[in-house]
Image (cartoon, rainbow, N blue to C red; front, side, top):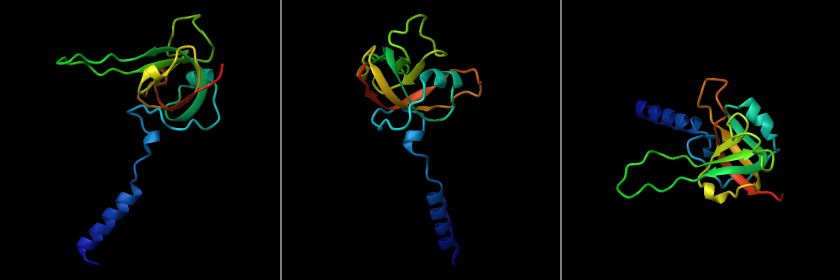
Length: 148
């Protein structure tokens, strides 16, 4: 085999073996169109364990939403993150919303969620800190409203 042919074969083998992980398992941009499949894990358990990676399904109530306002024409705005705060209980405002007691998901469009509506959500945990005490950072992958 000639050197150029061998180089092409090696390059092809590397490209086939080095397939990137599916978009669903990567963090960087929330999605909302994946099917919500799998066994739901309790939200309290997820928030307490603070997983650093993996795909999870849970159920809870949308307690609060934050939708980014458009940047005015000609202005230079810093990036904005749309989020929905979830709780396992309806109207769980016994204490201020806190990341160590509620699930906070980055979402593509917070306007798609209705406050106090119950949802089944699929999300990925994003490993952004080596600190085990850091709050869970998660991005939405799919959701479906549930009957109350």
